[in-house]
Amino acid sequence: MDGKLLLQEIRGHPIDLVPGKTVISINPGEWTSPFEGKGFEPRGYRDFALGDNPRLIHLPTSARRGVPTVVERVALRDFKVMVVIDLTASMSLRGKMLTQHEAAATLLYAAWQAETTFGLAVRGQDGMRSFGLGIGSRHFHRSFRTLWNLCSDDQASAPRGSAIHLRRCLPPNAMLLYCSDFLDDDGGISGVSDLLYAVGRYDFVPVVIQDALEYSFPRLRHASLMPFRNPETGSCADLWVSPRSAETIAKQHEARFSELRGMFARHDIRHLHIRKPGVDESRVAIDSFFRHRRRLSS
Image (tube, rainbow, N blue to C red; front, side):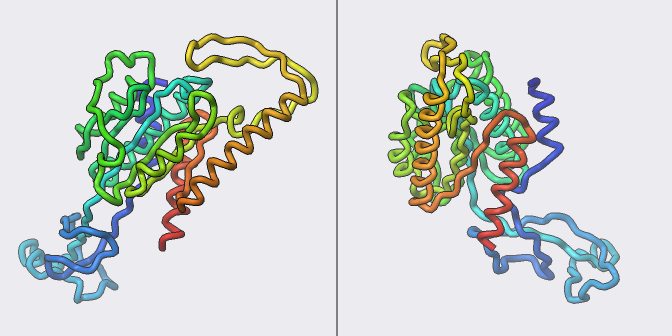
């Protein structure tokens, strides 16, 4: 998909990733907020309307404008978001890289629209690298171009970024959106325990990118040839799979995925699962996840 077309599709369906709370204030200053941090930011003003409480009229602004005016302000908080993508060998299988690209782009756009400090990082064979935190449209478009290069065949033109340690790259309680299939080179999930230890201080949101061939496996009525690909060499081969072998593989994959979900649950972590490519698929999954999360926290 073209980068401009992808951005256009994302813009058409914004996601409320980090919602603020608009409050009406008569006097400028601080007030009680459910969020951490201090300060206020003018969000504009509106004319006093019939039915409004007269006590909401902001006198200095009303005197300056010459009409009764209500000033709307939003409480600010110190909040940072980092989106991590996985470029290890297993993510190159089938359409997982495209799925990750669409999901990460959607999350970056949502973080930008939430007016937070956000950034992009990548997990590769050589460790974790960050492309910096920032705010505003210029930082978003730079991060979007970097993401496009990393998830396409033009990885050589992408910036290298700076090596980071996952445990110290963000302040406590920052949101870490981690896109990955959470599979090791041998297809296991042994590395997840170390990851959960490293991100214990963050608001960690695992975005699981696994398709139907990984969290399960097709049940076959008859033996058939199925294409398989080596993630390290890129070589492809058709292998003969019997119904009994398919059933065995499915049980192994489902047990592995259940174990992964159990590891998240033991750490009281809710995960997000995206199963196939498609901007709508990613958008609906991400939007539903954060809507449900807000309902649980309210």
